[in-house]
Length: 325
Image 1 (cartoon, rainbow, N blue to C red):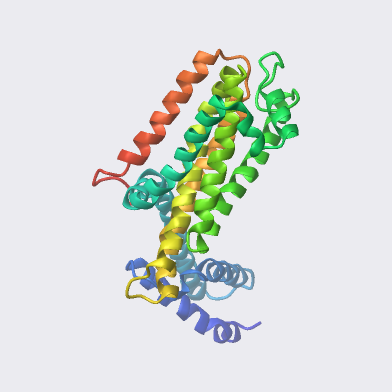
Image 2: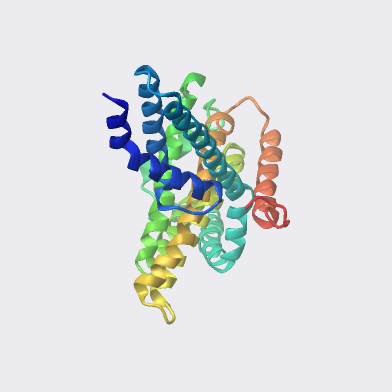
């Protein structure tokens, strides 16, 4: 292909790429930013063709300069994405939790209140557990935390090489619970409230029953570590769902669809933080909580430290002005 035909065929594309580059270099937003990586790759291909076909040095220099400038913009925006993610983790998420404290408080009272309340009831009145959990499931739960069984949190012993399998299982299981609690908030918040109470009752029933029959040490030493992230994540998922429900119940002067859209922005961000918490919880549960080597007191101390870490993170992270945005 002759150089003149090559230039004529791609001139408009190069001009558009040049305009996009100029806007990006001035820090302005542009609609073409999403297609920029693909445009950049095509420009690289055009440069390679120009060199291979021996086109003029003027054209090759022109394309090469645009490729270099495009490379700088492409990787600058990638690093900005990484900085935005880090900023959200280090500051944005805990700020959002504090901003939505009313929903977080309501969700926490529903979840932890039902958990603690029913745990005490089952501890004092052991037969109550069978009104909520079938007898066979209770028996399976007992075998998981039997002090003489030689394993924790599972019905059979497993090799350490299988921990990664359980890690994946815990992630999927916990994310399923969290998403169920969040998404059901679209039922005017009633769905989220139901799952908060239900999960609280289930966990409380197990805790109260195992403590009553003398399996408390194996149970509490197992759950205290990952529970800091897992239980907090369930409560935060409920808060996100309640926020959706409240937007439908009390949209103010906005149409319900618009109020829901605005609430969903923050709720989805909360769920992103919840996913991070559940990822950490699954890792701890698979690789630390199920270990039988550490003494119970060691696990209690580590667990207390993790609960303190979560509380400090949610209460104080991102308060300083120089924290990443």
